[in-house]
Length: 215
Image (cartoon, rainbow, N blue to C red; front, side, top):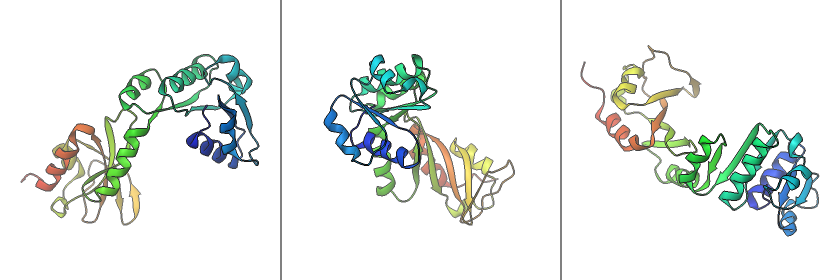
């Protein structure tokens, strides 16, 4: 639902991968973004109207994406697809990240556009330290790639977790990713990928720079 820049790009990519795609938009001119070679269906209408969604084949759909320019329209359409038509895989784009947590609790996975863009900018502006690779839709938890100071070499990762109040999701060592065990020891050159609460990003950097506690 939604044939703007995101919706048209998503539709074309899914179609290119061999999936059957139907696109819903109120403005028939928006379908021009799909080009003449688009093999899917286009349906003019309000994206949360049941008759429109029925015409688009939502009842037989494997997945539904609500990516219009309106948060309310997106969540209404996503909930209708999930609750009325029984679509299992549903996602909605949300501009207001404060709303994302509410919608997640309703069982609708969301993509908080502004938060995601800000996180990507941070990755490019701050190449060192705790840099988020991924952020959950509510903005509460990050998966961050961390270059750990050499002072941690030889210490167990569980000690690092305890000192930083984080969880090590996985380790990249010599170019290969691996899951750590309870006795995994940090080696110089390891890149750690930590699960970090949003309010602890700065504190984690300070704890890492301080090094392990003596003993």
